Length: 188
Image (cartoon, rainbow, N blue to C red):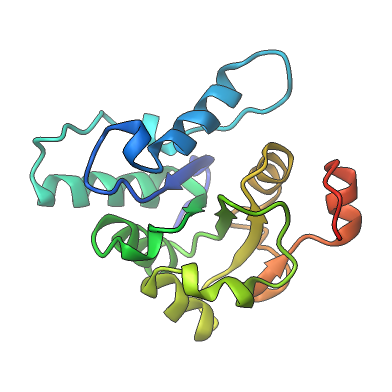
């Protein structure tokens, strides 16, 4: 599979059945887009969601699956998976995105936890994982780095990991205390 044009970052999150930002994790996706839109720092990324035509709330399930698959297969080098308190409850799109990204496209997953300052033991957070991710971490099929939802580690992971460079540590990769220090995050 050619990786020449697969330079995008795909962001997956639990929409909680709504497009109302305060009722779902879409607000974190929008925050990442806002970070990238600001021109006063170096936070930029190629958004895989913007590489194909937009989807509508009225699109059929089959159309949604086809479009999401196309984005992952043709445009994506890595996936940022936003993990909050309700992510594991999503039995529909997040699971589909994880399964397709890992099983069909061999995309590394940047697992970002919304309510944590740093991540040193991702296994301790396994109760937050959607089943599709948990299964692929446990069987070693997933290539993941586990990080907090913080601008500096997210940018570093987006720039560093992709189809040709996977996170160290297999499915339970983490940043070191030194790396967190470099990001300005104090690890206790």
